[in-house]
Amino acid sequence: MSAKIIDNHFVKEVYNENEMINYYTDIAHNIGLFKCEKVLFQKYLNFEDKILDIGCGAGRTTIPLYNRGYKDIIGLDIAEEMIKSAKSLCNSIDFVVGDATNLEYDSGTFDKAIFSFNGLMLIPRRESRLKALKEINRVLKTEGYFIFSTPYLDNKLESKFWTSEEIKWQQGDYDRRLYEFGDLLMDDLDIEEIFIHIPKISEVRECLNEAGFEVVEYLPRLNICIEEENIEEQLDDGLFWITKKVGK
Ligand SMILES: C[S@@+](CC[C@H](N)C(=O)[O-])C[C@H]1O[C@@H](n2cnc3c(N)ncnc32)[C@H](O)[C@@H]1O
Image 1 (spheres, rainbow, N blue to C red):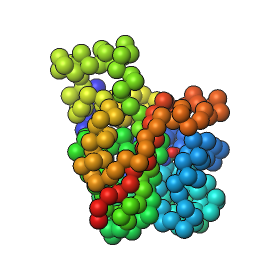
Image 2: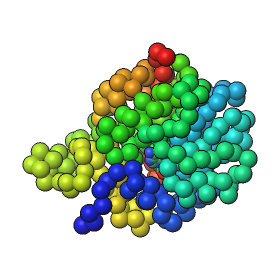
Image 3: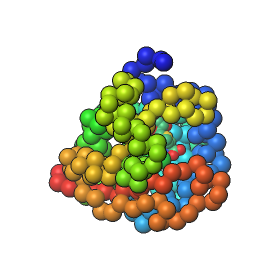
Image 4: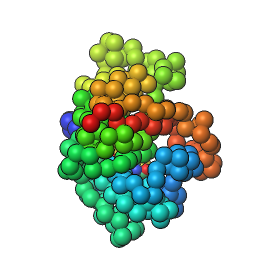
């Protein structure tokens, strides 16, 4: 087993891998916004908004939003190679390398922020995900919206896989580089270890509350709409969270 520490640096290395770049460049170029994102973005984003697209990858959401008329949009990602690829797909958008847990923007800069395709849950440790939420909250204007998606454990706990995971965690029989129950190292796209945290709904709500967000609505993706077959098979039955910054 590899002894790499699971931290932001680990995540950055994984998302700089060629296989990841190829996958995210392909979906940025050939797929763009999912149907459910079109519905939500049309409902919650205004053309005059200043928008930060966090974890933008190769621009799958940034580029079509820009093309639909949301011109004041910045795409930000921790992986330099993703940003290079995004720039090669569209050179009229400001794509920057940056870390959601340490944003280099003044407080109150943005009207809206998004973190699509479960990106927030790629950040290892609750403490760091909370730090990212606090940073996103800080760079938003009061009443600014943060829209993101997550997988969730609540509807999976009864499954064979998660029942056995829970027992392993109770018995201390898990990869000691992981931090919390719900943490997973998966192999996909020929990459051996891709980190993701599958949270319970209560955990997301608690973190949002601690970071200064109010939940406007959260809804299962499948309640919004069903995607085309080739896209549906790449997605899980996650949740979309629409949240609003409360206070200053
Ligand atoms: C699942 S991919 C989604 C990419 C893109 N939004 C899409 O839907 O095609 C998540 C992205 O989040 C980025 N990411 C992970 N941790 C990050 C962090 N701390 N700050 C900024 N980006 C991060 C990864 O590099 C990756 O490109």
